[in-house]
Amino acid sequence: MVNTCGFIDAAKEESIDALLEAAGVAARNGARLAAVGCLVERYREELEPELPEVDLWCGLDLAPLLAAFVQWGGEEEAIERAGAAGRGTDASVEPASGHRAAPAAASPARRRSRPVSAYVKISDGCDRRCAYCAIPLIKGDYEVVPPAEVLGQARAALVEGARELVLVGQDTSRYDAPGYGGLDRLLADVAALGPAWVRLLYLQPDGVDARLLEAMGRHTLPYVDVPLQHASRRVLTAMGRRGDGEAYLELLAKVRRELPEATVRSTFLVGFPGETEADVDELVAFIEEARLAVAGVFAFDPQEGTRAATLDGQVPEGLRLERAARVGAAIDRAAAPYWEGLVGRTVEALVEHGRRGQPSAAVGRIAAQAPDVDGIALLEGPRLRRGRLCRARVVAAQGYDVTAEVEAR
Ligand code: SF4
Image 1 (tube, helix red, strand yellow):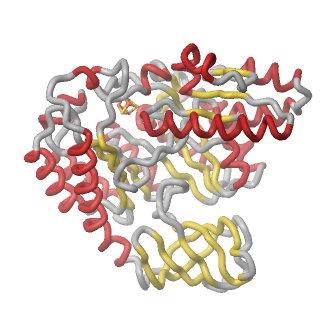
Image 2 (spheres, helix red, strand yellow):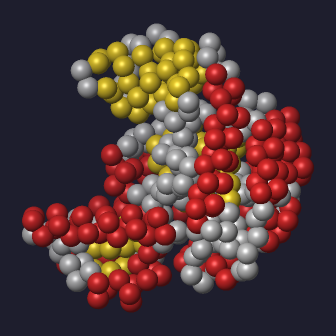
């Protein structure tokens, strides 16, 4: 089963490459091949005649996949688990700068191989309609995942051995379920299930208020993932987004007042139609002041069906990539003091997997590192069993990675 992504061209190409590779494996092994997910939802008619090797096409509704899987002799329970976990998930996407942008969720296959951390979807779709974004065209309007279902997913992940629950959705700060309440209650209920860490991703800036920050202070890691996209008001307005650099600096100050230990992550998009060199200068100046710990940057990639694809003032591709590289370098420079500042500090770390032939070394993450999109922690010390939450002293920082010595107890 290949879970595809149709978000931007790079992701589409990666999905098609994965399908071709899987078709070869399936042919050699006499296996069946199913293509599922966002790319199929959007481009099934075009894809089907091109890839006759695929046995089953299935967009975001996985019911036909379940039926076919049972018919093919699979275990119903296994595919139900994959379906619940992968409902509407996207592949991760590698933007131009080399900084990875956050995926909407990990693929079931990836999670199975790393159950220390599990993604839990709390909403799907988006009503915001940013001019460059194809997600609402694929996923449709915002829809809340009912709290009972969220908590069911979370319980199932914990039973399977997850120690960290990562709550995702396109617009997580908006969570509000009729007759239940908002994100503050959901965070409390998820935390009450007893995971080692709860991490919340994709907070739209206008949803980060005092109530949410207070709830995060109680129930989640102090990790604030807030996609800002730009700092120039002119560009943000053209994108159909609110705010500007000044408002965002105030927001970050508020975040740091409420959560002094906060690791702040963001995402930026450069080369949007009409963007000038002065806009990029403004963004770089913002990044220098914002003290973000980590950020991803995308070069604008016009997507069929979006407003931005037909706007005047398209920036040539070479220039888009150049700007992304410049902003990426600014992000690296601005983030370095954050990671160097951790050296000598004792922090929490989660052990993910051992290192072959090295019993006293393992790979894991500290609270400041989200799975799949951020750096890793090279851990050294005794009893580094998978899933252990420990205290570790950071002894070195290498870019966005750290080396840390785990305390005996
Ligand atoms: S808020 Fe995010 S998902 Fe929604 S339209 Fe904008 S970029 Fe796309």
